[in-house]
Image (cartoon, rainbow, N blue to C red):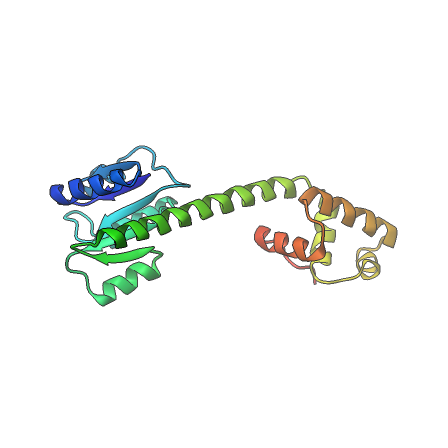
Length: 202
């Protein structure tokens, strides 16, 4: 899905025609208010082609509104009179690309495909993180405690001493938490813990 937001009707028609020809689904909007009032913005495999110079809110303000609402739509900016500082601000704020009007069809299609790929990658990341969080929720308090020590690089013997238990117990907890998290090595465990924000034990 490609969302188009531009206050020039002819530009909207031309872009819609081009994108339809290339097989994209398109939803076009001629005003910021209409776009922001849209009930449910598709994410995962969607992007926004956004005109910078809009009468209500400019493109950078729309970008900020989307960020505040939690919508992670990759944005391709179009402008007829943008300048370098505006381009830098847009890209720093996460814009996928910044193209000037009249836009070259090949450049726009390339930018849209890149933005859709970014959206797809983000969706996969969200799904993987959610699955990992579900698995983490299955850990017992003791297993979470042991996890913090394992990712600190401690050996089982040291962890057992720190937690006041036997080394065999640590081996059991360690094996269980790795199975529950679906990891097979300490390196994978460390990466999973980083994604989960698990604190390293002192």
